[in-house]
Structure formats: structure tokens, C-alpha cells
Image 1 (spheres, one colour):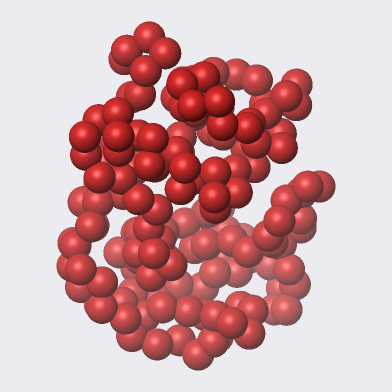
Image 2 (spheres, rainbow, N blue to C red):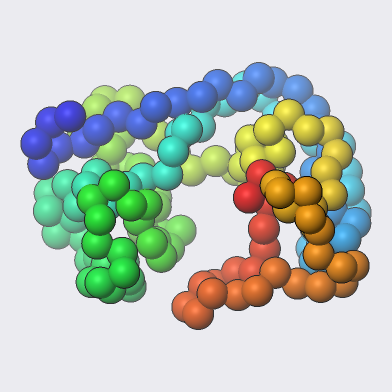
Length: 154
């Protein structure tokens, strides 16, 4: 790691292929389930952490995220909390310029394929511990969160 410089993300290659995208039990904009082809792509294995994002903020003068000063989210190895889509795009552009490699956000289909972890179909109500929430029940929202959606891998 370079002091105050970018750390290139550990990337995982997701192979090309089709998968069933969407959810019959999710929000209206997730329906209907449909088959989607996605070319091979690479995605970061881990979320961007504060230490790496701070290098971006210091180098560019970009304004910090809404929760940057929140005392609950101050550990250097914690994921960045609350970045907007625009914040994430700005970080990708900065990282691309620093490393001379092209980084971008995944498309909706790429993100869903990666989150499914190779599962063709999944019950997004099911939790990793084997429990599931009752039909029609939504995931609890965290104060300040902008979305209550969960992926199958979460």
C-alpha cells in the first residue's frame, strides 16, 4: 500500500453467461424474472474502505460522504458508509487516473450476477443462517439508509 495513495482492489473475474435476473417476490421493478446474458467482467472482492477513500478525498478535495464524520464509522478498515452513485463514480475515475487502469461501477445485471454467487435461482427471503422471513415481510431499514433491498448473498 502506498501512503496516501490508491490501493488497487483485489478483483474477482465473473465468467460470461446468462442467469435469471429479478425476483417474483421482490419489488415491482424486479419483476418479472427474466434471463439476462452478461459478458465476463471483474468486480472488487471487497468494498472500498475508509483508508483508501480518504486518499481520494485528500488528493481531490472531493466532499466527504454524509456519514464521514459519524463516530460509528471511523475505523480505517471499515467500508465507506453512505456514498452516492456520484461519489462512487468520482472515486472510480480518480482510481483509474492514479493506476492507469479502467475502473467503473458494475451494471445492475453485473451486480446481481456477482451477488448471486453462481446460483441460478434463489429465494431472497432466505437468510444465510437458514431462516427466512415470512412472505411479504420487508427487511428492516437502518436509520439513514436509502434502500431496504437485500440481495441473495447478503
